[in-house]
Amino acid sequence: MLAQTGIEFPQPMSGQPTAPLTPVLDPKIARLVYACPAILAEMVEQYGSPLHVVWPHSLVRNVLAFRAVLNAHGLRHLIFYGAKVNKSQALVRAAVEAGVGVDVSSIHEWRDALHAGADPAHLCATGPAKTRAFHAELVASYGLISIDSVEELHGLMACMGQNESSRRARVLLRYRPALSQASRFGMGSDDLLRCMGQLSQESARLAFEGFHFHLGGYALETRAQALRELIPYVEAARAMGLTPGIIDIGGGMPIQYVDSDGYEIFLRGQNSSHYRNARVPEAFYPYGGRLDAFEWLNRLLDSPCRGDLSIAQYLRKEDIALAIEPGRSLADQAAISVFRVTRVKRLAGGHHVIFVEGSSFSACETWFASEFLQDPILVSATATREVCGVPLSFHAYIAGHSCLDDDVLTNRLISFNRPPCAGDLLVYANTGGYQMDLLENEFHRHPMPRRIAVHCNATGGFDVSPDDPREQLDDIEQSD
Image 1 (tube, helix red, strand yellow):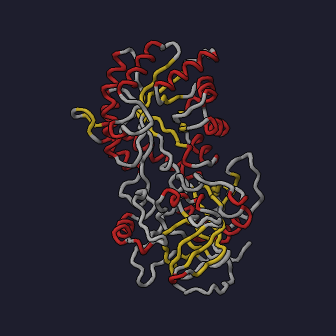
Image 2 (tube, rainbow, N blue to C red):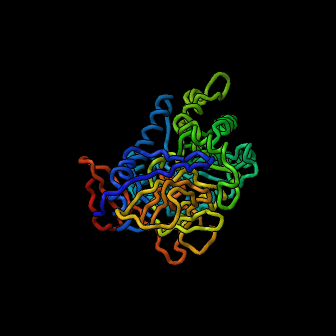
Image 3 (cartoon, helix red, strand yellow):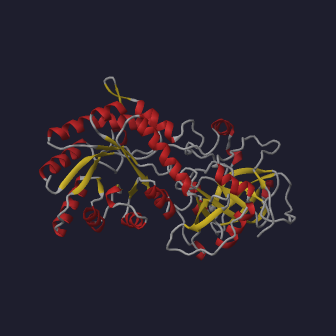
């Protein structure tokens, strides 16, 4: 076991004009990072850097919070965990054990969900490019299929004709809202009505269950407007003898990574000199927004729908279940990513770069011309400090271990009150939602980063298990 070590957050330097972006951290995760950093260092020593540490308890807590909002509005509802946000099998298992469904976008996610114990009837396939083999498995297992186009509906029917399945295919129709007319996803009015007519004629083979839409961004009102746009189609479906029982509004519920006040101060104060590439990104995820996912949903359900009815009142009156597909917001606080420092290098102009074992493919916002706007937590992982040859207080950007100049975890110059040294750790909080493995690869023949699942046990220790039960892990000491 490594010697007990210390924790330091980056602190603003004298003259540093931007506010720190201290991450929000779940108390159980904070205890590992703050009180037991030697255990964290030992995990990295055994399993490599970067290391993704997954916390299934956070996903279960988020499921319960979503349910509380939906139940408070008296709604029939379905929750599908959006598995695309990361590749963690432990989080899929946690969703299944919490009694929610899984939103899958490929046959591979489908099979992983089944491996995790999911009931096929509780899976919803929403990807727009489903293969014939995927359709066949969905129909055979009675999975719910979101139909993206007239062409997909015809392809599904052709697949059923070839396989002569005795089961009806369960389908939703994906609507393209008025604000998304340039999108390649979903159907406009003519195609939607055409599919509804086909479904009414093929009721022996196709079970129509309702409508689906999915919007980019995180605005509440755009979802409310899209749902209002569906009301005439609900009525048209009933006039055709169909029974729409579900409206699936997709995901896009925002989460809070950093304090809202500090985030607003940061946005107001930033300029191009705060970035190593002298460029302020044009857009960010709302890392410090004022609404969490649960209050967002509560306000959506209270939004006006038709006449004097709110959205929740309309859904109750029409006996329609609300389906949601949270991905990022169910994975809120469900993972951290830990990078080991290799060295600090002085650059021209007095700036510094911190090199880490790992790449920006494991913290992917810079590849989308944006930034992951939280400060990493510096964990001192060695008892003996080396002489780094840099000022005690300085700011630096963080770069990966590849030969690509743009392999940068953060272009933002982050302030530290002491330089990290080789062997220290930089912990990025809350990486479960699209951050930790969206772009990962084996560039330079580096192996794919490991994922481990951690649970807090009754004695206050940490139980480590494979993220995927098909993988074996070496033993690790888990005491405080």
